[in-house]
Image (cartoon, helix red, strand yellow):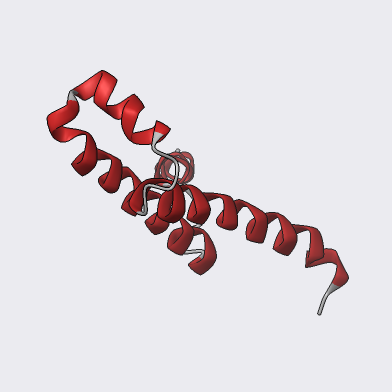
Length: 87
């Protein structure tokens, strides 16, 4: 393993774990009910479970996105780079 990449790998792993724990354990499994209570206060009790789970799934998808490095360069930067090349 390249030691120069070690900080990047550790940082990526830690960030992914935070997103996964927040999405799966705190929101989907509802181990931290405070998250659903906050959503209920904002959007109403009727939709709090649904929206909390949607946010949880979105956070898990962020983990997949981070770990797969899919489309690493954000789209606005790609558009900017293409525009610069055309000048």
